[in-house]
Amino acid sequence: MIVVCGAGGFIGGHLVRQLRLSGKLVRAIDVKPFDEWFQQDPQAENLQLNLSEKESCERALKGADEVYNLAADMGGIGFIENNRALCMLSVLINTHLLLAAHKYGVQRYFYASSACVYAADKQQSTNVIPLKESDAYPAMPEDGYGWEKLFSERMCRHFQEDFGFATRIARYHNVYGPWGTYDGGREKAPAAMCRKVIQAKLSGANRIEIWGNGNQTRSFMYIDDCIAGTLSIMASTIDKPVNLGSSELVTINQLVDIVEEIAQVKLQRDYNLSAPQGVNGRNSDNTLIRSYLNWEPSISLNEGMRKTYKWIYEQMTKDKFTPAPIGYVPSTSVIAK
Image (cartoon, rainbow, N blue to C red; front, top):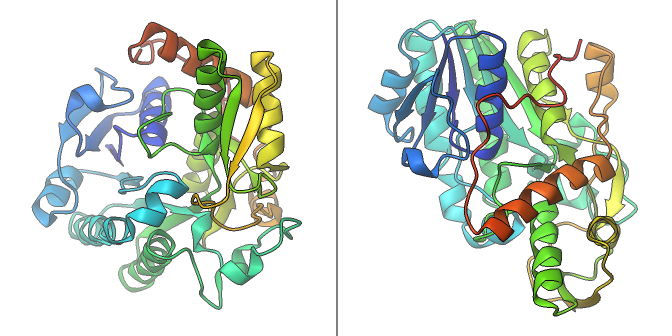
């Protein structure tokens, strides 16, 4: 039995779908009501549980062989900068899940960490040097969310050392794609830019607000690469945190350029310098994952954004949410070797 925690979320929904397509027996867990899950596979055992509670974690993991912990209270930069306490409380989820994993003899445990663990002083320049895994120390992570992730990484490490079950940790770098959040305050930059451009195009406003000066640099990983990498890391011998992200660095202005090209519009840009904007530059050094797996994320930003824009446009023009079809197969359906 494979348990996916946070299965009602963006990445979790895609992960459950891929595991089910591979013929795996899956138990899918999320705190949200079922009608709020981004995707729900009827062939999985779907449970609504609050995993910040010890009893719920024990119910979720009883009989499990493998666990993927993607459950967290999080969102884009606007959410994590304004909800630091809520982000920190996610430590309860990982704590109780690890205790339950030890109690029931789970063989492998995956923890979804984040590039927000990296030291802020290494992300001050827009011309950032790609971040190596060692750059998380000396510790100076994103306040709130980043500290919770870094602490939970250490907890996984020590459970592995003290209790002998394998833990695997991936540091996700800005995952995006269809069947995810694109409005409401928790969306990340790629989805937010798609929504803003679509709104400007449909309304005829021909203007877009950009948080910051647009020169901030980031890399963005398409969801299919994220799922392939996650499954490969779980099956690997990588017993330390490893980056899982694209190394294709772009500015926020360049991200807007891509979306404008897809939408075939050119908009007036209004820069909101008082809005949350995060670090000045962040990119993924993929040396470690290449050395272990002979693989790294490779779907281009242009290709991924076209698929993402198309899906968000359909949702906004239909004025309703369309769940993933039962037969949906991600473009990266073969697990990386």
